[in-house]
Image (cartoon, rainbow, N blue to C red):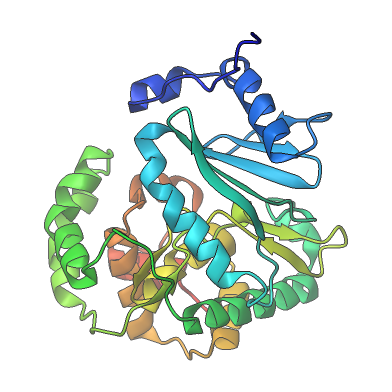
Length: 309
């Protein structure tokens, strides 16, 4: 009897971190064949926190056992947003589990990563992309939430309170300088984050999750919905500011206005608060790659990182 090629165990983060493409490929090829996907040019994408393989016109995304709870979130949100946004998102062809791993077989979107030479795009081209992205975010936030069992967090206010309670220790643990750490509590106390109805959030809108047509004038893909949440709309704009605009005030302002906002000083302060509270935030790293503030304060950071004109 022919031995079934299996995906290797990955019950812990340590197990998963030690796996290589050589470990995964036999099981991935077998799974793709069983799903009817083309394996002739099968190859992994070089970036991303989870294994993702290009299989002809399709993409296979794998969820190791330690992260398999993210599978229903991505599968459910992909189904909810497909063909409903101005930017294409992957259609789902198959969802399942095998050898303790979860998987989604989905469409492979066309285009190249927006992680390209930003300045080479030119102001007019960036203006067009900003408008497209702002309109797409507004459309995403207007969609009804899909029904997903055990979708975390189920209590947005509780999530925000927990992030607030652990904010100082979290950024201190990530190596943020003491002069900044000591400002976190007073700054957050000074910012009012009003309650708002939860919307469907991607939570990681960033250049590496966006595709653009070769000429750079049109967004052709938004993907990676595994960390999607339901929460305050402004939480979404942390990614837009820190990972797409990256200090480009004209781009950020145009995107936010296309979304339907008129940002002001209070908005910038709220966005700095959301930046500190965001689940994936690492302000120490942001300080290394985003524009320097005029003064070493979070108020000055807010004015620089979330400038819109």
